[in-house]
Image (tube, rainbow, N blue to C red; front, side, top):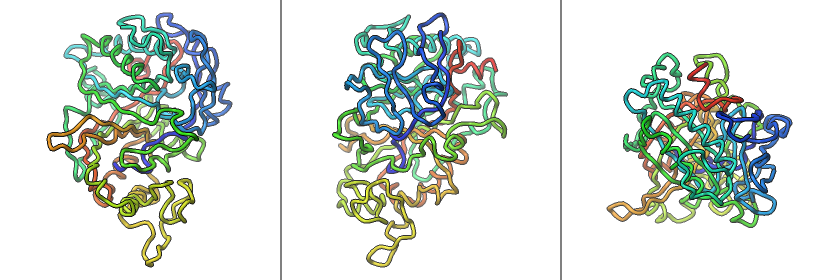
Length: 443
């Protein structure tokens, strides 16, 4: 998948949902306020950091704010808190945190449905505590003891193979079919797929890694680690004013991400009742993960003007080539505009043209990506790029048709290598007094 217009959810705002007074096993409350009451209406804004159990926690509006904004009025990033219990899982609508840990697990033989249920209940209790800044009840190594919640979120997804292993084959969604092979794919199965997927985001690297280590220990005997990747985004407050982040190619990344509050937003991102989708997934989503290595050495050999024609936007401010320089990234793209030479201003193979919803029957996804840099490869080139994450209501009408078109006609694809992939069904938010995935296991 390409980069510009694909990854930054900095305009994302919240959705309504209710916080519960207690968690499983009597864990501390996730928040003392109703999320619906705070927001007023869905898409009005996401509030982070209300509630008991966190000394000095603050409430602040994240509606339409950049990930570069301070998480708290006093600049104390550690106090930012995202409610665990809501209509949708945390980590979808929130702005991307500074750090992410992605990991997948496979169920061990014989774990079955009961083992999966017990694991998800253990994870729920630990996550609910960690997201309030408290130590996990079990296997807490105290690494992040004094860090605060740091806007920690943990998002869970189910891989296709899980359903057979857990005796739930009749509940596997039809849309959880394997993604097709795309032109240019060079996928390593060992670094993709998996029965259970977790996206762990936080504004502090130690907090994110600590949460992952806790989940790994709680999974022992039930699920084994399959793969793990770490990524990063711009640290909140790193810029003088809120701006859309840049990827490792230097491009402003995420301009045309769908925004909560827009007409049809929920239908693009969240599963609705009816159709061929199972009832347990209503309010959930599908997540596509792709590890995309950027061929940075080759990219950086291009002059800036050529890079801009590959993307279709100016590198300085993200303005589209169809508009005057300096007009800004928010300027609408005019795909019919002509350039000084009489040809189209946005080249036929420019990324923003090929990826545009107008070029793909309206297909759209909510992208939430992070950069990664894992050193160098044997040939000396950077092992670096994009951890692409995209939430959508149906990958058959979202990611798949768009990526098929990109793989065949996107000029940017010459500078990318898709090296790992995964597709997961993301259950809805955690119900009052319940646990992650309860809708699937007990619905």
